[in-house]
Amino acid sequence: MQQFKQLTHRIWYQTPVSETDRPIVAVITGDDRSLVIDAGNSSQHAALFLDEMKKQGLKQPDLVALTHWHWDHIFGMKQMAVPTIATKRTVEEMQKMMDYEWSDEALEERIQQAIEIPFCADAIKLEFGANRDIEIVLPTIQFEGQLEVDLGGVQCLLRQVENDHSPESALIYIPQERVLFLGDAMYADIFSAKWNYTTDQTTRLLDVIAEYDADYYVWSHGEAMPKDEFEQEVTVLRRAIEVTQQASGQVSDMRRLYRERVERDLTTGEEETLVFFANGTKK
Ligand SMILES: [Zn+2]
Image (cartoon, rainbow, N blue to C red):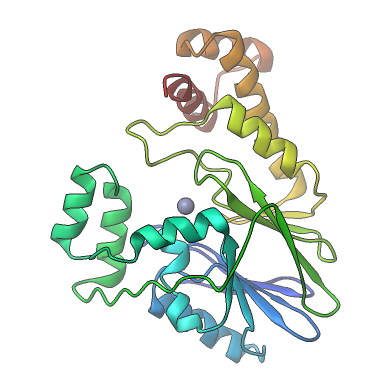
């Protein structure tokens, strides 16, 4: 059961669903306008979000900002029915999807062509069932670099960022509320045969994130993570980058070096992170 929660004075969000890959959808409520972050993975998802806003007495949104082009963040756009902002690269990737069909056969064909992955195809089938009423709507406003949106009493800073999961996606920072929306930027590249992180892209991403001071860091398929917890995640990634470089991507050496540094056994998360970085060196 998805919940609709208030994070700060001006920010509300709806919790994600892992089975159908519904990401967090959030709204920033300004004095004059409100902006929704990501459109949800279907019309139903977007409708549920808009309904929750109404129940809380929030005005309907004026704008949507997309973090990146993956289906689960954009398929609710038609239902949102307001102007949408995205990076130029996100728009270009969405343009490629305009002619796609979404039947089981079409999904299977794209999996064979290595354009689609079973992880997404399975979640699409689960979210939509037999009725694939999917219509992609292109964003109205595109930007490169950064863009500031004034909602009245609160700003949203959109920043294009490199990362392995979805190149040139957007981070969204709300300075007045001290919240940074990460989208899926912190996740690995899941579209390659072997899920991976690269040391270059991850270093660039972490350096950009470090420019923003936040109390909460929102992972689209996770939670609004408090600062101290997020810093621990960053430490794991930075340490993993160091041992990957030292061991030139040899995973057994990476494990040994990592263990020596932390003076304990690796957690499952750390183990997985090292494997992803080792995969990234072979890309
Ligand atoms: Zn994604």
